[in-house]
Length: 306
Image 1: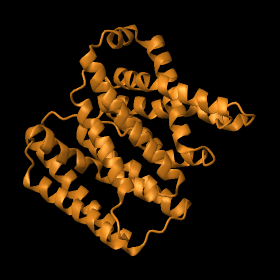
Image 2: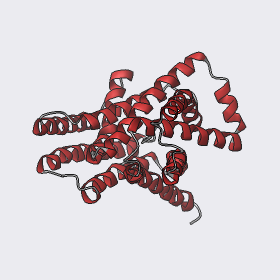
Image 3: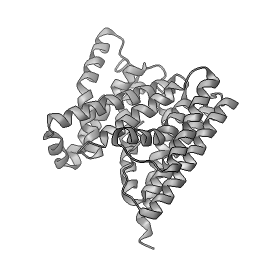
Image 4: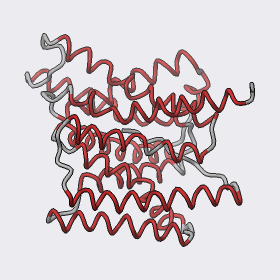
């Protein structure tokens, strides 16, 4: 009975992590009056402050690891930082512009984009079922593009930016926490410099008398970090197959929020397009579970940093 406790707690950690990521639109909607670029700069700055404080309090070796990285490693993490900044900006902007459904689609197709990038960058071989899943998902995206006269660029942008981020992190030597700290450190000074410039020009929203907005901005760092820590705890306690299934909780919650809470139209065309993607994910997940049962291969699951 005791042996089941780590797995059970890991399941709860995973549910909490992906549940929080799924509820992110509610949080970012609170900043409707804050321009997305300014909000991104605050998220970067406060995330770095929170991560640096955490490393200082918890792990001196983490600080040593970050302080001893080579120029090549810094360049690698700079590319990762730029990709995650694009992902964060696009997500924040899309949520507050009323495109929660498209963000949901973006994170539904991200696992399939990751597989495709693996083939292109690392010459990984796909099984037949995986090719079928990628083909079905692509058909769904193309159908949505035909139905609406243009491709769902927000969803594609989110999937490609995060897929590219995962691709870079596959070569990165630091742990997730150390790596994210370095990435935000790289972006920290430009973000703060821009916020100071905005404040001096009168366009900055921080410390302008709206205590509620100030407190919300200051919590953006912890809001970013908490689900990452929960995710890390979950990965240590449950199988990757379980994580693979749990990762679809976040975009599912976002889908329901977009339709039921924010009143975005889930038209017949969208239903058909999403159905293609869901069928692809079912094929993909079922094939992954079957393959792991047969050979139990080593795999890495990247956290969806939204």
